[in-house]
Structures are given as C-alpha cells and as structure tokens.
Picture (cartoon, rainbow, N blue to C red):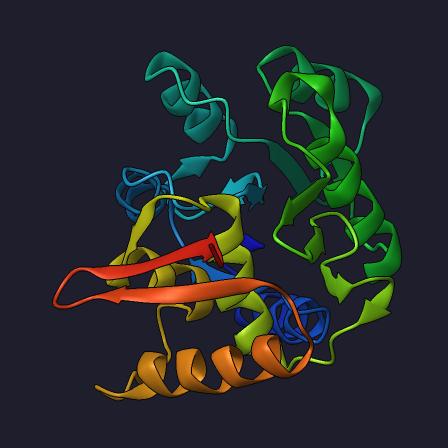
Length: 224
C-alpha cells in the first residue's frame, strides 16, 4: 500500500510516516499543495492523507484538482479543523473520509482499509495464482493455508506482481510500490529482493514463477 501524506507540520509528518511504515505502508510525504499536485500526476498512490491548513492554501483544493482530472483516488482529510460545517464541506467537496486531530493510528488504519474496500474501487480482496493465495486486505501470502513469512519489502514486491499477474510489470512500477521518495535505492536492490522471493516461493510450493524481462521488468505467472 502506497500513501501520499500531504502535511506541512514536520513533527506530525514524521510521527505519521513512522507509524504507518511500521504497518508496512510506503509513505511519500509532501508539505504543500503545489508539490502534491505534481506528486499525484502518475496515479501511483492507493490513498491520499490530506491536511487542510497548508502553507499555500486549503487542502480541499487538491481534491478539486483530482476530481477535475477524473482521479478517483481515495482521499482522507486529516485536520484540526473539525467543526461540523467544515466536516460536511470537506465531504461535499469529494473527500472520502474526514478525521480530526488528534486521532489514534489504529483508527486511521481502519479508515484507510475502509475506503479501499468500498465497491467503487472494485478491487478483489483475494488473488490466487497457481497454488499461491494473496490476501490484499490483510496483506498476506499463503500456500494451502500456510502463511509464507516474508519481510516487508519482499511482500511489497510480491503484491505489486500479483496485482498484475500474467502481465509484465515495469521495474520502475515495482520500485514505486516498494520504496518511498526518500529511500536510497541501490542498483541491484530490486534484483536481490526478487531472487530471495523466488527461492521462498519455490520452497513453499507456490506453483508460480517470476520471469524476468531483461531491461524491462518482471512477470508473475503459474508454472506450466
């Protein structure tokens, strides 16, 4: 799960980023509306967490920008502006949820899961390829009911591949799913994750293979 956090308070942004990363989220943080509008162009984020009081305007302007460009990415407003008229206004302008500060991280995580489960998203919650089952909601891989123990980044690589199983996934798309903006990516990091993931899937009897397309990306498919 990749999140865009639009928050100008450094301490709040650092605390939220740390808490969300502990729950296996990839978090990209930007402090202004202007930078956020650039960040949303590639549509790489599953959910946007949006403060309203930003240095260059009201966060609601980002929602207007998204909807004007036909982007339906879920937006959860996180703000100290919690009066009833402000909450109603935020929702009426296209926010999918509205949560006032302070809040518990568990509540925020529950709200993120809720917006991702909405029918409009039309996302399957479980994917099966070969003998491998992947729970997209619980973010868990298993074979015949036995969970495969994977480190966070290997799990994110597998999620990126299984969401597009049977199709080639570009290296850049996998890296976007695994690393945030601030991560220093070594040239062979992704290949190392793929190598370890292949071994673990084989040992688990997953019945799938990760096929590399030189210079392009990777493809997850059932073993013939």
